[in-house]
Length: 599
Image (cartoon, rainbow, N blue to C red):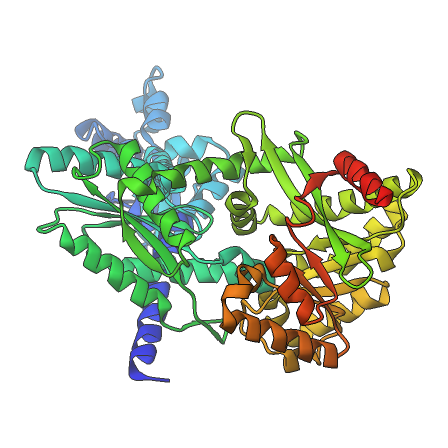
């Protein structure tokens, strides 16, 4: 471990402790506050003192409401309040009757007596249990049983009310997990920053910060791990800025930073760059070292916008452009980023698309080159938005994966494809293999195999006609668990294919360790292959080595006769692409198949 990593970890641990102490102080004052905060000194009266003398004390001190009574050892034995004493002496002939009586004979003998270290909450409970009249009389405070002062019920109520208001303010304005300002306080501070910047004519910056792939970390390592990661993340952000700046959490893994009073706008870019580098440093959580990255978007006031909502939208758009271009970086807002706002609204609408039946499946045929027979179809997801029309999968699939909606969507795709397969059989179509793509997030779920098995049972499909397609990146992540899951799927009778092969960093020799049946050569190698010798060499090598491993091979994205002839020369078994057919809905596929059989 290098010195920088060590220093960063020490600072993180230190800042995390400060953060926790701050939160605990703000939310737990009711546990640490004691009656000492309420105490004021009232000169006590000896138990042997005459009642008339005590009455004189009350007459001379009109602010005095009650007085403690003590014995010779300064230990409190009772309490006398103004109301009780004056009530006695207002009666006819009272002075004649009581002028020799001692205060000990008429005092209240059961006052509330508490130690100086008693918490305010405990005092409140004692008062309730002892009777609310003690709120009026007040409380005697002792230290080592010796009288030291008193507290009034009014002061107790005032303290409880004030503390409750502070606690409610904190709950309303600060994030309970990380202790940084929440969305409500952030909006207020951003509004104040806009007003101050207009008065001082000095720019400031708003930075949107999003932790990359947080959902996957949360799902894989657990919510406790994820919570601690967010705490550490907030600490790193706070340590990267000045005390006069603001870090706030909007929710989930989204944070924002307000950089006020910028001498030069370039300072915002330097801060963003520093944050990206700081976040990348190894982080120790529960004795496990991990590395994370973040995507940042920067909007400047007034250069990019001079309103609260405008700055938020533009910083958000810049951040999402970073997401689209590989994450782990920052971007200063540009007008070209405005399309990202459409993507953000898509996330909300994506969550409702399933319930609104806006998804459908299109099917693209897969042809055996030797026999010219239809071997199967690939089920491809399509989204027809009621207002936007057809939204490309390249637009909504990444958003679905980032938000976690891909799990429910992917499960629907598999169920619908299997249901459609059964429907085709009823209509007289042959038993075709049906290929379905599986996302990394979906595949990594512990109950994935169980859910697949349930879909098989619900739809009645023979599992040998299901082919699940996984990308190289999926099978190369956590190889041990990958093999376990793939074997479980194989036991169900399902076929497995590696999709987009050649775009990742795996090798064919690596595939010998995986229980897979087929390789799909990525269309980027097929496109214009006849004019690209390098791609042709790669494809030829993949087909030859795949064949030696007993794997089936399919080339996707075949669009022209020239591409098809080149693939044929290298003895690829199957092809798929626009040359044979575009993807089509289920009812059109039936017509296409009917025409195919005529020829």
